[in-house]
Amino acid sequence: MAGVPVHLEVNVSNLSNEPKSTLVQLFLSQNRVDQKSIDLKAEEVGKVAFQFSHDKPGWLNAEVRLSGDSLPADDLYYFPLKVKGKTRFSLSMAIPRCLSKQVRATTCEGIESGDPGEVGLCHPGDH
Image (cartoon, rainbow, N blue to C red; front, side, top):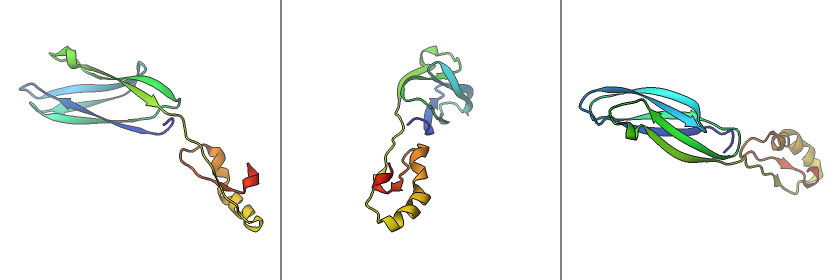
């Protein structure tokens, strides 16, 4: 969802008989978002974790790049990533007039903030 952090894990394998260090880079629409280095023993599999967010909804061309090694064919991994727009919703309830000002004062401001998944309670005639 737009503006919400995404957690992405990449499995990296060292298929050689020697320890290796490699740089793992994350690109979104040809822009490098993050990079991390990983040291792997011979024939070891490790994980690299990235956390990122994107502000605009829509499709992104994502890719993970590994620093060069003796097998360049597996140094790039492309994948599409769909960023959904923020979900906005409100919950309207019939609230007696004597309580509506108290409820509005404590929770109605949240509807306008646009925070994902936030619920505001307001008197039905307020919006």
